[in-house]
Length: 124
Image (cartoon, rainbow, N blue to C red; front, top):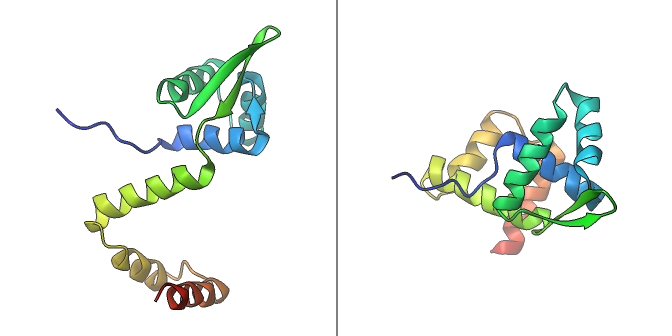
């Protein structure tokens, strides 16, 4: 049996970004933010937020006549885990090929390259 992915799907991450930004949010709050970006059904947002609660990325509490959701993990922790899983899965645990690919594809600006060089120097 395949192991369950630890990382978030694209849609789950999109919802988490909204919740992190708002700090606390109802399904309606998240729905309205996403609706400004693209067409999406309210029930889809509700289902995804329930899934995120099941996966323990969100917790909810009743307030008035709605549930208010809050992230259970900080953004940095989730991103770190997603990057680690990606590097493990795609590059067999080595980040170097990822960095080389980003540089070759010119995905890093000169400023970003300089910052990366400083970070590497500090890590040594």
